[in-house]
Image (cartoon, rainbow over all chains, first blue to last red; front, top):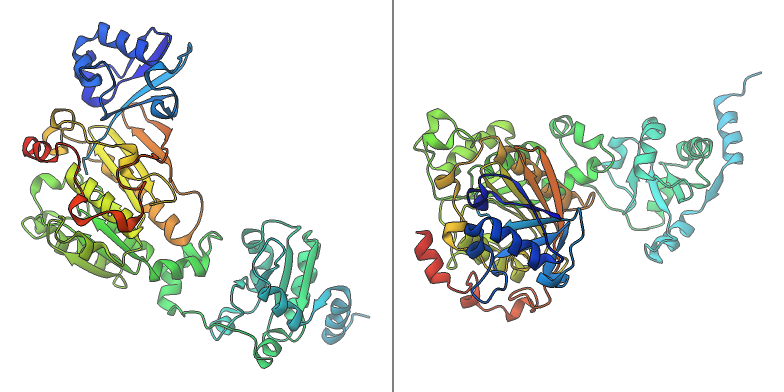
Length: 90
Length: 397
């Protein structure tokens, strides 16, 4: 079980909470589990081919999964996934 | 019987190690490697103002005990002290030995002999008595000191936007004594700005923001040279505006300008202190071209418009740009002074509702569309462009 931190723009899709617990052996599984629980997050995270949208950054603890093994990166119990969108407000 | 003053000095000089100016000059010529000594000038400020040995740190003898650790924290470091003639530096050397410094020398003949022999000296820029008073609390901080304050006075910092983030940044950088502060903003002050844009005032509603900001900054510190750009920055004017600035503070409210700024600053190798805010959330990082990742390494493409609401559409806690803007101002001062560890290659997230800070690593992308190439390979017509740029801008309105 990992904890997924939900950015403000996705919170309406998960009932307004800041964190969601989700199961999975790797990053892809955890995010797909999140999408199963909250289907509105699916198109916001994943492109049509099932890969992560390029504008979605995902961090396992403090490291960008792009420099790890992407969606295949193993996730352990107690790990934190951070979904991070770019923001432009100033 | 107590010794006379002259006898006391003679005794001290016999107890401390002394070094000839020629030896010191030779060691400085050999470069500033690990073995080179820390040169400390223990004279009074008025004497130092007339000239000092290049690279010397100034610690007046009267403040030696309280300030030397800030200047030379490592007691095993080789320290050479000098004054005008070699007397005060001998007494200071004795003090440092008593404080546990292991390798201290006093330069014989002092600055006078050094100068007579024709070795290199430099005349520091002199602050006025009013400046010394105004910036006294900076000068007392070892990491800043007179040298750091002078760097700030010589620095040119450009603020993009005199809005939520730009307001606190502009006020504090002006107060800190950043010598030249440019501000780019084409907007006028609106009543709805005043919940967070604290540089503006109710009686300046309707005025150009650059004028309102200048008035507030000058009121705090008339020393600051404010350069106003009442324009919207775009591909046609960005190079002209940003060239020559030492640091740029990004507080703009839209993605196209953020990407444009990134590409232009990579080309000119200007560091950017970047922050963004929305609701109760803020993000902060420093993008130092080629030393660390750029904005495109972090965000290769912007999110679609529906996932990138603006503060105008979704709102923002009024205090939040204060918090994030002052973190930006802090990073600016660190970059200018050369102190601490700037937020390069790290992204700081602040979530105000939970009162949490989270730090994430940001890596350089070896395939980055911009900073994987050398600056002269980035063409004018590529700058600020990203896939689906036209559609993005149309959707964003």
